[in-house]
Length: 376
Image (cartoon, rainbow, N blue to C red; front, side, top):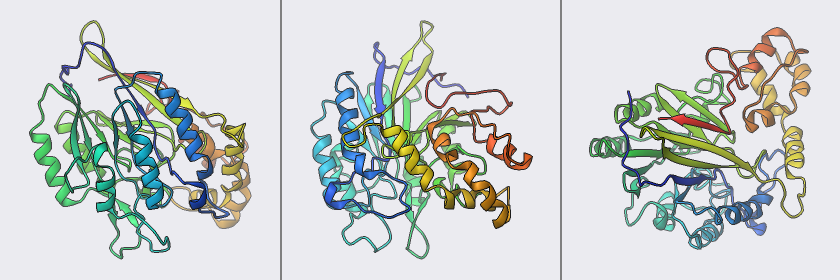
């Protein structure tokens, strides 16, 4: 299905994406020996990116969820006040960390409180945790809430609930077919990793009803979805729908994205994606090396589960033997555009790991995760 040419302004539209900020004021930093997130760098890293962005004359900024460490009111309040100082509009959606389900955190923000706090960043005066906004003439944004409580009420699972789906149906039906509409949601809509929808480690990053949502969006001519949650730089496509997921600000490689929408001389719309990195903040002068080591130090339990469950199904003894050789595997996945070889691994494990690299469906090299131009 081809998209109509959207009546954008004559000039290109440029915006940025920063995901999974996990903002944590120093006195709120929650520590744990297995914590992957370097929340200590969240605020200085964000400030550094915002300083860069203020020089670029952006049209808007997207933040696809996990704005705070664990939904602490003071962290949300700090971020709201900081975003109000920016010279361009900002649009947010909630992530699973923004109003945690578990009661182990003494002071958390509820979903209605989140919507009220971020009324200036997409929600307006509506109490519902989803919205549609006009970004520019001919360009719209739909922000969805993918955070639902599990049946026992103890955790957040990724899904679009029935009430929200009904609202989405009505909203899509009212779209101008000449407009271009972007969608932002925290959980992934397209698989970015092998077995992501079914593997015990990957499925919690996917929308449970992703197929239904994809079908609705494509039927409405929508091609672009911006997600987070996975902490990986990756661009994936299914049925003509691109899911552009952005890695976490507080995890290696500490990325952000710059995106340009433009038309070529023939009037065809293009999406150009560039990626930047935060390479140093005070106290973490070589941030990539330090955070890569941080992730590697905490990777063994994660790698054991990857090797033992899902398609590989290795025994614990086999996994324990191989996991040390995959110490930096997840960091390389998170970086995007990595090619894996692992010639020293058993063929079945080597072949499985290679699927996580920059390989297209036809087996060719496809480095599209960080820099690419997509004709829409």
